Image (tube, rainbow, N blue to C red; front, top):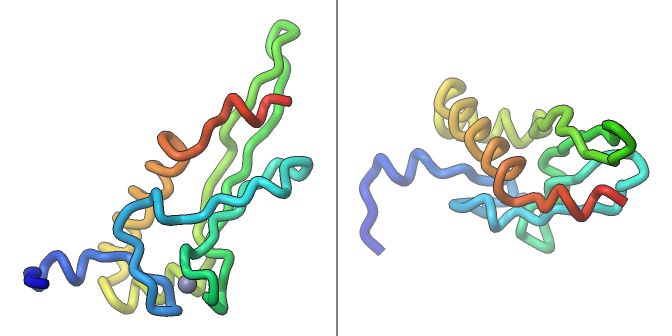
Length: 115
Ligand SMILES: [Zn+2]
């Protein structure tokens, strides 16, 4: 596969070697629903890190209507550091932030959490 140097250095990679080209590849774990937390997992099943980040949300009631409010999302340090080393700190920060924003906006069905 031909690819320019530019596209190669732009890719986000897990320390296990798995590249994550699209946020749809991350696995989202909703098991900690009671704790208002969603885990972001590496798509590689045999990854030694597994958890790459988390998303926190709040349950609020607005005029008797239950709502979910996004709180914050972060990737864990080992994952961020790995990519900062590969891409430069600034580029990693931009790319990872874009991925988090995309996950929060497009990959989570917030309505299913309102129960
Ligand atoms: Zn991994």
